[in-house]
Amino acid sequence: MNKLLYLAKRLVLGVPVVLFGLSMTFIILYLSPFDPMTAILGRDSDPETARQVAVALGLRYPDGTPVPLWIQYKNFLVETMTFNFGQSWVVTRGQNVGQLVWERMPATVWLGFWSVVIALVLGIPIGLYAGLRSNTWGDYAASFGGIVWRAMPNFWLAVMLSGLLSAGGLLSFYRGFLIPTDVIGTPNALGNLLGSFVPIPSLEWLSIPVPNFYNWAVAFKWILPAALVLGSSSMGNEVRIGRTAVLESINAPYIDTAKAKGLSARTIIGKHVARNALIPLLPVIMGEFYLLIGGSVLVELIFGIRGLGNLYLSAIFASDIPIIGALTYVFILILVFFNIAQDIAYTFIDPRITLDGAEQ
Image 1 (tube, rainbow, N blue to C red):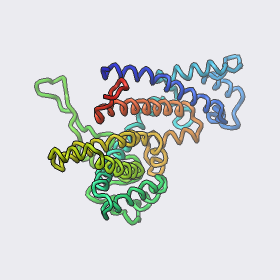
Image 2: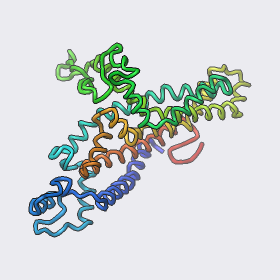
Image 3: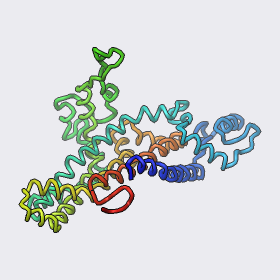
Image 4: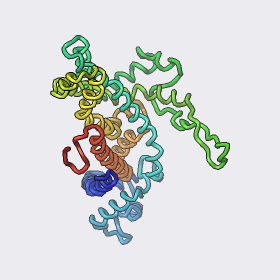
């Protein structure tokens, strides 16, 4: 099956998933103890003012009668799926929710990107090393380290690391090492990573961005502790699963065949062992991108990062339903996208798997 056709098919099949997720969100929000009037006006609000606000929110008709639930549900689906999120009720009252989400997204994407990179760069090589040197001291150390990293809760590690790195902490020298930065808050350098735009001499109407490498270094050093915390559990998973996958691949019959053909150890490990070990690792690797959804909430809160996770938690505490609905929709789209990407990635790693579901 053509990859574009498969992609189109999966996108169509993803629509019911999105609808189901939004439907569950609507049920939870509107059957929960959230009270929009109390959230916006407080407990001692004037009844007439409350009625006017309810009309403006689409909860009541101008005559005061409540809008039927099915109409509210239809409006919620249409407005959310068309990215018409409305305005914030409490967190940043009156601000467009779509604009707010767009402003907070770079911090979360930056944090999530480096957490995934750190987990991949450290977890997979250590797991492969442990599998290739099984039952040695190096294997024992790597396996023990993977178990420890996996066992440490993100919120506990975040509290410990932020305390050690803050003023007077044991690792406080980190803030002044090479480039002076902080570790708490959102790096201002994120707003100027692309630097200036330089026009192309032969094409004056077209300009290219020139990255500001100093701002990149500042933003990376600032976010590194939080990214290390966020990627810790995935790194532990990669070490354990990578070690097991390598051991299974080494003992497979095709490895004996490759050795009998006279292939070098580097070729066997790089072309056969490592590639086949990536097959069980792929769900773990793709699952790391879900860190943008779940794990970032507490990590952003502890490190004071103004990202989507922090915004989501603030919206829940403040009963800000437009923000909750918007972020839930964004997170559902991320989940659907990476599920599709995972299926397509399998076809590149394992040639036996085809897009039409048949094995070669």
